[in-house]
Image 1 (cartoon, rainbow, N blue to C red):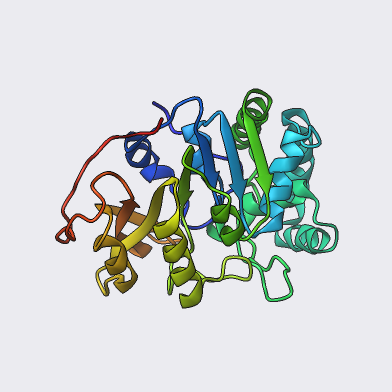
Image 2 (image 1 turned 90 degrees about the vertical axis):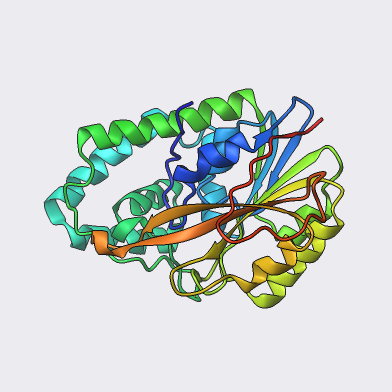
Length: 297
């Protein structure tokens, strides 16, 4: 099945891991999907749950998807906007990019947010302590070619149609609030920021947050799946130990491209953790692949 790529880009997006995650989860019509760290939304959008709560502490992500859901941002509007703004970018280059960035930081227009997400450096999404978008220009004045705009328009159309058909709710809330509401019929998918690998104003992640998330997942009556990392070439994720001592852990190598050069492709051993009937199994050895299909009823 083809993987849908969402219109908003951000670092750490799980696009290439979606088939792996999707093959590990099976949803029924009565299942409610709860995603406290939605980011781009790529995992949940590809799972296509009938009922879902998508949440993120970044209010601009939530505002963008709510604008699509409410019909404020439509495929037609996006096409016209990107054609107009793309022409200005092609003519004025980085000067216009920074003009739009300043405009967004003042008015927080969802369309400007989409523009910045697609024209900033390497698809990075970052905010300063004052909450202002501060990613530099991606150095591609001709970014919004006709084919590229069509691709983005189709991505917006996918979300718009899904919001018409499915019961999807987009909220900006703390993960503690959402997990406290989860019940036995819910499936929780967590993709929190990784300690030491990515920190920005909205996605900062502390040791205290890590402990709170672990505590809540241990207590929840819902079924959960957690995306995290096991190791890189330089270090191992010690925070994974507490999960692997009592839950099922699956691992897989993945590459993140985080710069302008192929030399910046960094290998990471990704991990999926779940509280299945195999809970309390012994810790899996490094790099062991364990596959189990979960069915939620």
